[in-house]
Length: 144
Image 1 (cartoon, one colour):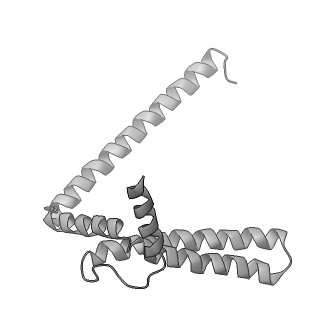
Image 2 (cartoon, rainbow, N blue to C red):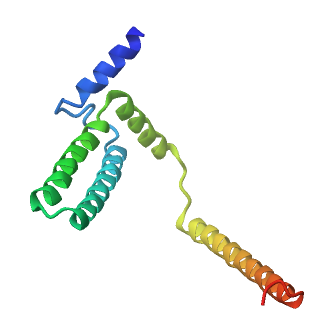
Image 3 (cartoon, rainbow, N blue to C red):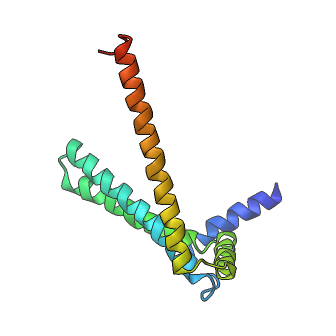
């Protein structure tokens, strides 16, 4: 119980700090994560603005509420990638990404071609199944 209170208290405290936890470690994964979170917040507030425009006539509400939520969401996104446990996780993710053996361009093109051929083949099979069932069901009078 005490550990949970300490952890929730420390997480809450981390949202009100300005500093960056382990500034030079895991920068790419943290920046991409922040960008994804900020993009989600931005799209959400944009959609909120559109919904408010259809229901409210006051421009202060139409632009003020989404604007404040956008600022709050961007701040929470910025702080979220600097929460100690989450930042350590993102640092570890980036370290593991550097350890991975990535495919060469030739292997990537070859693998992509295999995937595309299989997808088109399966699409053709499904189209033939659809054609068969359409002809069969119209023949027996189920579909006109």
